[in-house]
Length: 103
Ligand SMILES: [Zn+2]
Ligand SMILES: [Zn+2]
Image (cartoon, rainbow, N blue to C red; front, side, top):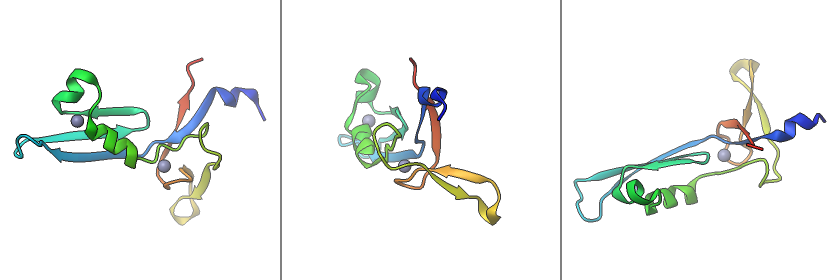
């Protein structure tokens, strides 16, 4: 158990995108995006406050698994044909990424 590993952890890297029609103008569509801890939306609320109900909704749906918050361990899946082994999220089966703790 090398200590160095503790400075980084794995988190789900699954990407979530969703389109929302504006409630005031149905021809306007906002594009919301969530991936890991990154989030973005094209609506005015996000531009001004970096917060909006579109991103909130995506975050509610998103897996957001991370090694620190969840006791489920990483799963190792063999690639197609038993080739390269791939680490996947134990919660949703999506991709995972190593996230470095800025300490
Ligand atoms: Zn938005
Ligand atoms: Zn996941």
